[in-house]
Amino acid sequence: MNERNMTNLPTMLQQQEIGETASRTAKSLKFAGVVLFIFSFLSLVIGVFLVIRIISSPLGFSRLSPLLHMYNLKLLSLPLLSLVLAAAMLMVAKAARPYIKEISLQNFSHYHTMVRIFFIVWGSVTAVELMIGIASAAFYLARAIKIIS
Amino acid sequence: MADSSLNHDTSDAGTMERLREKIGRTVPWLRVVGIASLAVAGLNLATLVFNAWLLPRYGGRLETGLPSWNFTYVLRGVLGMTVSILWGVLCLLAARKARGYAQRSETGDLIGFHQRINNIALVWRILGILTLVLLSLVVLVGLISLLANPPF
Image (cartoon, each protein chain N blue to C red):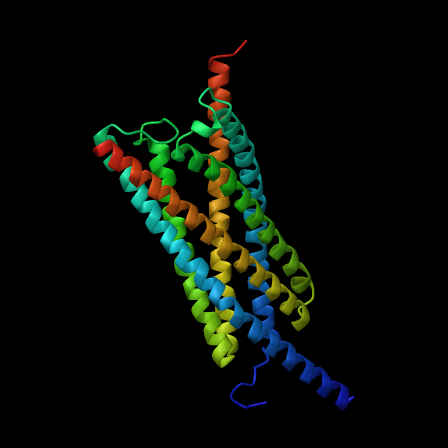
């Protein structure tokens, strides 16, 4: 192995320090994951109720405005995405437990796999939210032009 | 004994090498979260300015039918924007540390990377506490209004 590329092994003290940080991270993510799960579930239930009310209105599904279709999409998709994110958070918190219990490089590596998965999920969720936000903003803009003109 | 210790060290070095690669592969995702969060914050700001300031001038209303200028709407918008900016900055800082570790493999960068992740988790925790407080307030207000005007 090339000397320059050789990976330094952290000392026991440094591993301990990382373990303590991981422990705090896991506690925060566990709490936030549980709260996000409850909040997303409630939002989903309210969202489904509102969507059913909008769809069963006398206007009918096919004659709803694009803005209301967008609103329906947001009501259902955002809580679902948050539920997925909450599951990823709880997964990281669970993966940190063996590492905090027994500081070993193997457990550390497993914890990192979960951290990586969490950021992949979070990145995907944020990207989808951004796309929905841009689509929604386009509808707002169209409505604004209509109102002004 | 010496051989087994040597094997252990080699396997540890291998694990750390794989870990370094793993952290290197996390960098693009950290950047995705960071940049997307900052973009979401920008979009939130634009929507907030549009809904709370521009729309009322032309008599427009929100999609929920509420007037576009109302306290909870603006508070939610400002809170969401602040949190998005915090996540964006922290994720980009974590990406920098992670890239530093993937390139130089210095343990200081690894510790710094974990501290950044801890800061991100801390923002999540604060958001969780705020959500719980707001949910409790909503339940409390609902109960008070139910007691004031019982439906039966």
